[in-house]
Length: 264
Image (cartoon, rainbow, N blue to C red; front, top):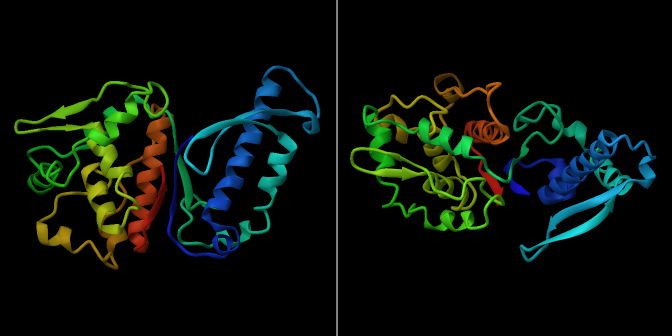
């Protein structure tokens, strides 16, 4: 379970299978690999035809249910993507030069480590423009109350049941407010993507208001003037890696002038 996202870039695979259909088949491959790894780690060498396991799936009404699945069926479902994979080779929305690289996921539960990391990325009072914009969070409706309710089920969406925040002289910004900005306002259009990238220090933020306003629509020299400036560290946990890859996706989508579609 997690946040599925994709760059809103039209292509043949999406026309033929839809984004949801591609995601479902990608998940089938991941589940097959996970079940296979479990068997092998327990020295069970039975044939794939006889392997199965339980997986938790989200139903159409948003609830979850547990089903028993066979590895061979999951692999057959995933194999349906093979014929479409070549279309991804030269796609500008392909983030990591792999089939269906415009699609990604942030896995649950979200770790406390990445929450702290995001809070540390926020601008300081010495950065006037981004700090001023950040101070308007509650005026924009980002109170954190909506995200806060997801902490009640400890360990499901968030590892940490407590809300962390960063104290400033005039305000406090919480991780819950950031999650609302990221995931609870619908698909991320380029204008919102720029704000997120700036808040989280994914692009340089030493700019005047006129320069910031000129970032949408995306200028032709954006890749050179505003490169992505976050890298994955060996010390990152799974959530921090997921979020950094998500921010990289936002950056690429902004360069392409496309939205990032979310399924939370």
